[in-house]
Length: 101
Image 1: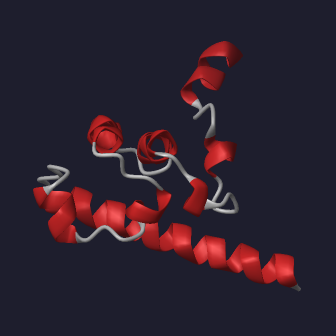
Image 2: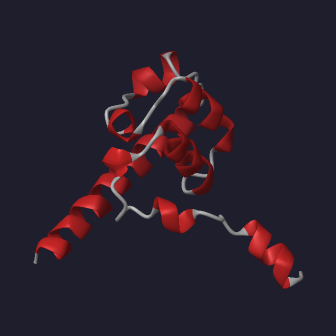
């Protein structure tokens, strides 16, 4: 594969979605991009944006809300989203501890 193709396959804005970024300031568009690029579930991005799921809302989502309000019908996809939210919160709190040290 040419370097151009390889670069195209890489998430373009992954650095923007680094957990060190303040997820509390994420817009629904940031959340949609996070779903696509970090969680690899782009099929739900439009729904999250349409329902205005921003960073603070993302971290409060439950399995029931994912299923009922956001139409994430696959139990595995719901588990994956919630697991990635936990990782995001863990990484964010780790970077806060490092920056306060």
